[in-house]
Length: 152
Image (cartoon, rainbow, N blue to C red; front, side, top):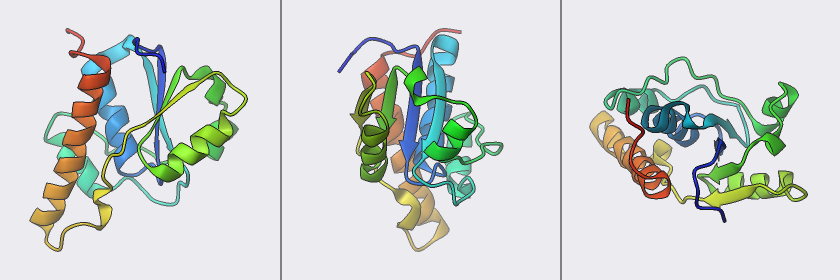
């Protein structure tokens, strides 16, 4: 596993509607143009999650225009996985998919076990708390892996 700063990163999770869009948005906010950053899911059967939009906006990351896409759609649209230096999987299913799709490529795949907040909490406040925990886990992992935010 390479520990330097990659030139391109793909974040992935199950549906590209909660964790991976947040990771993409925060990577762009913290590190600007230092890396090309995208996200994808094993499936793209959901729109961006409203709670993800809300808790990301609390920290200045706008996700409302995000459009969910799967690995398959990504490749259909011309984004070759071989063009990424690093794939960061945020769920076990996306890790399996990333490893399968890159088994003949020299691409680092890292697994970050980020909690899935989508089924947690009975009330709006409880749900927001769970989403904030996932958001904060993502931010902590980004800072631990890539270092201090880029100035400017």
